[in-house]
Image 1: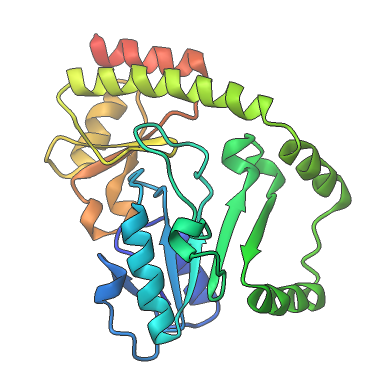
Image 2: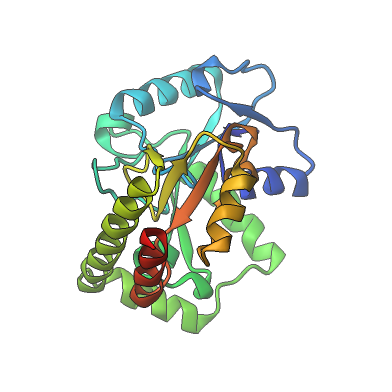
Length: 251
């Protein structure tokens, strides 16, 4: 199993749970395909907000198909693009209309603010999904009926998604301006619910400095060694708490 060099810890945890060997990558097509069975993509990325281009996705899919590697694309932030429009691995411009060897993972946690419901779904290669369905039934991983009903309601309505996007956009703009004025450089962050920020210092020094001002951020080292000089700043707090953070950074 392979996953991005900078990534949410769940990929590594999943590999450890099934006792799979795991490696990280900068560019997936540079991996040694020998013995590799599954490749995780994450676009838009958590923590960096980086968005893979159609060209990058196409190259990855072509490489994976050439070597018989299953591509699983974590697209939980797909509807939260800011500076660019994220594209699914299943989009015809990427897959040429063929979902063989491709699975996309989607969640209502971000688009519909339903993190506590643990509601998500997979779409893609029917042969792969058929195996997953069989395993899920026998392992008792059945989504409760009330959560299924909430999922249907949320997926059937786009108005709340647009409303939530506008909230996130306003918070993002306010936090980005405050962080840059405070001496931070923002990298990537074209999408998702986070700003990937650095002052080119150890991330724990940044965390301590911001904590002294009452602003809590996640140390980039949580997401891999490559994040050791970054922090992840989320704009998922309430408008009031975000406004308070902006004032503290300006004070």
